[in-house]
Amino acid sequence: MNYKRLKRHLIQLDTVDSTNNYAANLLKTSIVANGTTVMTKRQTAGKGQRGNSWTTEDGKNLILSIILFPDLQTKETINLTLAISLAVYKTISHYLAAVSIKWPNDILASEKKIAGILIENQLRGDRISSSIVGIGINVNQENFEAGINATSFKKELNQDFNLQDLFSELFINLDFYMNLLMEKNFKILLSRYYERMYRINVPSDFEDSSGRFRGTIKGIDEAGKLIVTREGISTYYDLKEIKFI
Image 1 (cartoon, rainbow, N blue to C red):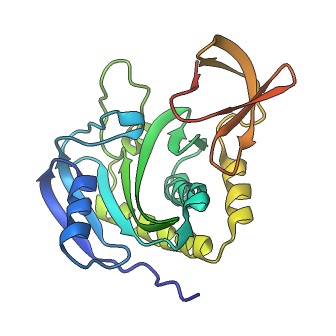
Image 2 (cartoon, helix red, strand yellow):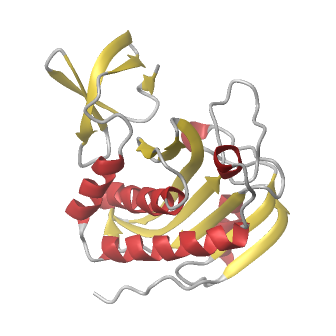
Image 3 (cartoon, helix red, strand yellow):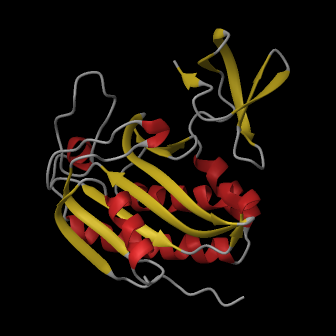
């Protein structure tokens, strides 16, 4: 197949309710290139995973949504998550140590959240017609709301970073992993994801609908569900069904 590599078409905004919402409107009203990116300094209604909000200090972090056209069946959706997670991981781990991917697609540095990803797919039949990938990376922000286990480039390294330079690096990594995805290298993506997966094969404390328990992450299944074993029995969890303690 002839996969069209990402085209760097950047739309920069001072403020917007949500870059994902803006990107969704672009898809509805115009023809956009693969890789079209909406970036903002200020987001008033940012969306996070599990329906949470994503709040950041104005102008200090990388806040963007990128429009992609992955040629995937809906049953292959998890591989898009792997590719995007690995691209963000690679960007951050170039500068920071102790970086990991917390299922399904949070990026941690020193076990604190430094980046979040929200993928919204548009479907046509049994295929993904387009994807809007929202990415937030904490860069120059030092103060976070009480109770939030977060960090940033600035907190970890005590220096400011140029947001445009980081975006350029992120875009290159996204293009690399999207090309790997479109070549159907699913096994490679999964293997690399496991190498970077937070607390895989490490006994950990969790909580599900039955209460708290000690278990071990063994991986993910073809649908992207988390596989956790306890007392020799494996359970498969979707989003919102399990959390780390």
